Image: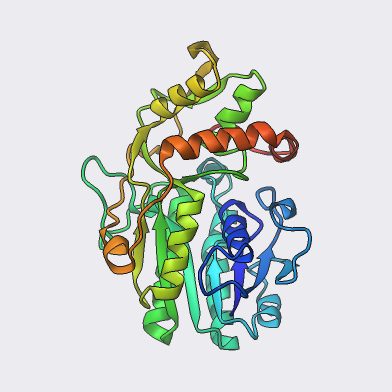
Length: 329
């Protein structure tokens, strides 16, 4: 088995790649992985082994059709993580999000058709659904994205589905809730707040902190992706939720407690434009069809994540203080 992982030097893509190389997926112990990553600010070669007999690293852009057609022959599947993913950045530079998330997905799918790669898993987000006051979204819920990031991901989902319906490409789509864990770029809420507190700096909390998210450990997410890759149905969408809800204020209070910080370390900032109030996924489908269930409790996962950032200051400082990185969560 040989799989191409786009965006495989990013947070979730690198975790998935390391799991494959570590033999974490039964039946895939000898699988070969090609990682394609442009190494933007969020892609880090240090997230992957420096050398591994089953890993090939290619620095390049998913929008580069010629490169895709050069490296794809011989692969059995593509797991497509590559995307611009930070909502705040999309409010100021939407063009890059549309280019990469929509145009890049189309380029990857075209190249799969051209080179005979038959299996694709397209990684998306719960943000494509918009905001929900009560209850939870099933996979049939209409897409109502509220940020340029979410709109670009919704566009990529529709493009992926069209390649299944029009060309018969074996594509499945996953939509996950908020991920957290080691190697996450410090622009995102949990690593930003953890690293700020480790440095004795205040944390910037949007508005009143009432926004609600489900939280999913990256390890659980990658296990679910592998289930979809190996057992998911063509043309189907699978929600991957964390099974818990937390307000941003609750997350903040928990981090303050775990890092022995006081409420004075919280700095209230103006709320994000178009900030969705609540996300919630109904994950009945993936549980019943594929036997998925999260294995890592939020309490254990959060404690382990804090410990990783405490133990790896060189990694997160290099990521956090690169030029032009965003502030906020």
